[in-house]
Image 1 (cartoon, one colour):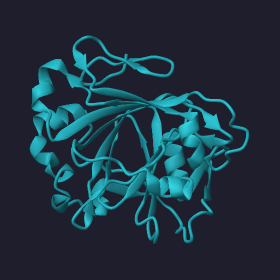
Image 2 (image 1 turned 60 degrees about the horizontal axis):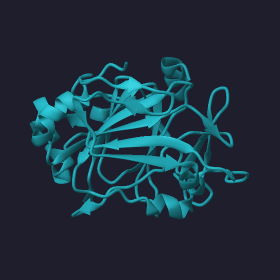
Image 3 (image 1 turned 90 degrees about the vertical axis):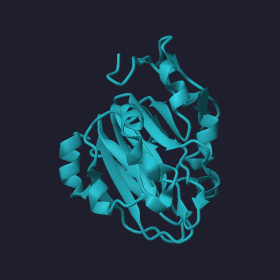
Image 4 (image 1 turned 45 degrees about the vertical axis):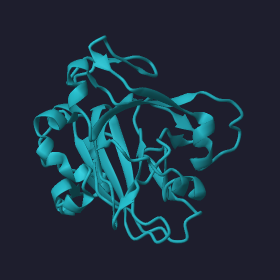
Length: 258
């Protein structure tokens, strides 16, 4: 049983909830879905579920309280596909004015690497964010993102997002993935995606969570005033150094034992 705001049972490839928890929708991401964003697409002539997404997860007693900000969970088992660590498809968020909607993630179990990148047609910044349970990762406005499971542990994420947006997957589809691919090795390795005309060198960070390590679900209910920026990107006032700590990759490897 995972430690969280409500009971979550971790099965081999999915999450299980008791009758006190409501889930609005479940979605499977299949290998056939991910094939188009992999570094090596050869030999994939079968299908299976790679990860699962659970939308609108909340306690039944809280269902009427959650309107603008949605709470989700994602289950990403450990694995490697043609040498590349299992990952999410990757997406951007729609814009309101000149800013895209932010998002917040928390590692509930395991370890993760988030690849954040700005304007896909004119990349200037690529960040690798390394996190482990129970750290919180804030996705700032105007960044697309992919989440990778680089360990042998089952990765479980919670996230908070504006309830009325639809993720934009097409930019990653057109480029066959993010600007970098993360592959297995000792330590892990990364390589630039040649479908991008310009790929800047990545910078390496660990999270610097402004709210401590409380659970995101509790934060959404107990401190909703801290989360207005999720629906109002113009009110996102965090400087980069407030949410991320830049570190040498060797130090990060040692901290997370990757």
